[in-house]
Length: 297
Image 1: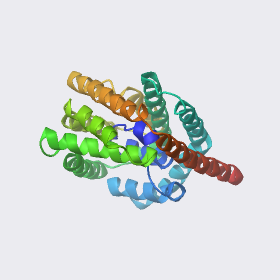
Image 2 (image 1 turned 180 degrees about the horizontal axis):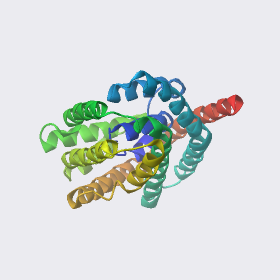
Image 3 (image 1 turned 135 degrees about the vertical axis):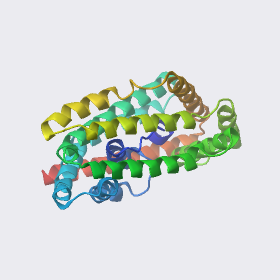
Image 4 (image 1 turned 90 degrees about the vertical axis):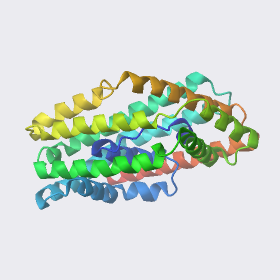
C-alpha cells in the first residue's frame, strides 16, 4: 500500500525528479517494475538532456554518473524498501493507527531525500559545467512542467480539483486493495470535499524551489564547491516555505491520513489479502534486483 500511504509532493526540478524516478520504480504503483528499473538509466539520460541540452563532453559524463547513482540505489536503498514494505505488511494484519501513517510518511521522506542527495553528489561534476544558455534551457523546460502541473491539478473550480483528487486516491487505493466498496468511495469523496486543495500553493512552492536551484547553478561552481552547496540546499529546502503553504500542507496531510484510515479501517478480508499480495510482489521484485546487483559486483 505504498502509493496509498505515500502521495508525496513531487517537485519537477531536475534533481528531485530524477531521484524520484529511481525511488518510484520501487515504490510507486506502476506495472513492470523490473523493466522500468532496469531501463532507468536510459530514461534519466534522456531527461537530463531534455532539461539541459548537454554538449558532447557533458553527455559523456552522464552515463557513468547515473550508473553510479543507480548502483548505490540498488545496493543501499532497495534493501531498505524491502524492510519498509515488510513492516507495512505486518501493520496491515492489525488495525492501522494514525501513528502508522505518520511513520510511513517519515520513512518515505527520509528515503526520498537520501536518493536525491546521492544523485546530486554523482551529478555535481556535470552541474558544475552548465552554461548560462543551458540554465536558460532549464528555466524554459521548468515553465512547461509548471504549465503541465497546473493543467493536471490546479485548473478549474475547487470542486473540480477535489473531484480529481478523490478519483486519483480511489484509483491508487484500488490498485493496492482491489475494488473499493461504495461506502469506502463515499467516505473518501466526503473527506476530500471538506477542505480546499493545496495545488495553487503547491505551484508557488514548486516555483520557489526551482528558482533556488537555478540561482545555485548560476553561481561560479566547481565539482568540489557545488557538492556542499547542493547538500545544504537539499537538507534545508523546506525552510523557505511560506506560512500559507505550511498550513495547507498540514490540512492536506490530515486529509490524506483520514482517507487512508477510511480504507484500512473498513478493509474486507479479500481487500486485505489483495494488499498483502501486491506488497509481496514488490518485495520479491526488489529482492531479485538486489541479488542481480550483488552478482554483478
